[in-house]
Length: 526
Image (cartoon, rainbow, N blue to C red; front, side, top):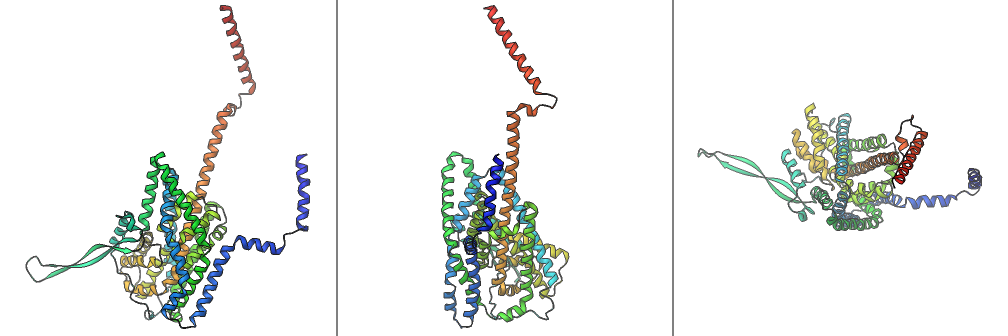
């Protein structure tokens, strides 16, 4: 009867819905309000492009261009302001709240995913560069005016990796918030030992502090500090609660900043378009290189990463991408994966169902070590420069480019133009001239934006995969616990089929008769 009532109650409801459908205006309003921030952010990019193209026709001086980009500068400053407290507090609280064994598993799976996807991105970059051949077919190197001399100084490969290890262990946590270690060189002359006038010159490395946050050192310290707090037990609970509260307060600030992001992105894009010089000449000479980077980023971001996510989770990856669309647009506007980190945390937690423990532990690590876009662009750039100089790369050099790009992308700073600084390492490793980096710098402001989008997309998919891994593990453990509880609570479940309930009853009757006989013997003794 209950089922019939439910069915009969459901029928009028089904019949009423077509008669009283939701008005189109209400439906549109509901959809717009649900995706208001995404719509505003996309509109900000489009309006920014229109403003930039319109203002370009008016000849502005350098000061006026700076004024145009001022609201965008404010957005970057606001996001950078909360990077350090967000990264440190989220990693400390995340590492303290996760069991050390689970922490090792999560970290291991995350690093495996980051390593595999970065290698795939590097391979795509090399393959695309050989297919499109952006540096071949031209008689001479493209000459673009106004490149400047901002080419980073070449550094030895071993010194670059030693700097990476030094930055993992900062000597001063306070200075790590705004400075990182870097190796420079000085030439030291030595006189001949036999008294002759001959002398040799030696290039001696020495350490310098360069501007830029050492986020890798802060990440490592925060994780180790969180594990140490968990080891303290009850004594560390107060400090863990402090970091948790600090983290939650920071995320409230992030939610406020998110509503300013569309305005900031609009003026960031407009300011960059106004700054462009000789656009036609730039694209005519470097158009194939730009197209190669864009196509490679699109293949990796729209096909490879979603395919990996779908194969492992069996969920729609493009629904996941839509959930982080605001963060991806912010990454395109700011060109900084570190600055996008706060918004990415907010998006994956609220829109994609990733738990706070996962997102606030994995995403800061991903923003530091996972650089799919940078690795792909560096491989394209290395092959492009080799083709410009008519250098045919052999198999060993190609493998060297792949491995070096994957490894050096870990040390790439999550800041604008961070990948160009590590590109010099790859060029040195395969013996290519670093002076041609000036051509890469000429269009880096554009290519770096798609690099950043791909970087943060890989971080988000990594968080989603880890959430799926944790969910599966917890379900298995719950199933095992339930089966154990059932076996303990119902012994008949563990009994073989040939042991019927009648035998148990018979055993119960025998026990009762034995008790009665025993009590009768006691009474007779009395």
